[in-house]
Length: 297
Image (tube, one colour):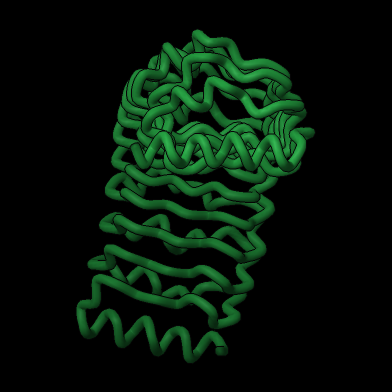
């Protein structure tokens, strides 16, 4: 779709007073200048286009609440993003941005921030200003460390840090007292970070494909609300005793040589996965049968 056609769509939206404009999947390379006339716009979708230059036209849309820029060719976000003070949802996934502008800290009404596969190597400390943020995804970047200021995200409930190069998390992240979901899959953790043990509302913890060899009993005792624990593809040999409250337990692709007897004591267990360990098939089947009968009783 050429620029003139896009301009016509924008003019039509202005005349109609539209609050939502979907310009996704239109092979757009640059935005029309008349976009700034959309002063009433609350939701703008520009995903799956070919935008290369920072779309500076959007920073004057001060009533904007949702902005999607996924799957473009952007290498930076426009200067002045901080002016979008009403923005609640921002997604810029699958763009080679490399750097996240510090202006993101001015978007204090954000509740959701999606930054998947943007080639980030660090996160600005200003992210700690996002006190209303409840959902954050940084999956598939090149992060080796996180800023301590992430501990200030007091409203955060859902956090994905999968597919990075993290070995630890700052102790300040123990302040994330509302967090219920944490995904640390495919990093370089050798142990469960201590700050995780101080997240009292955590229900779902994912640590697939790390380098963990051992999990202390205290881990499970500390996380009293945890019911889903994914430890696939690690180096674990023995399982802790105190996993009683779990309903989902995935231990695929570890190094168990025998079926852990303590699994029989997990009274609420619904789903158990032990594929690709070193357990003899007959032994595994017999023990699982015992678990099933215990739950039926």
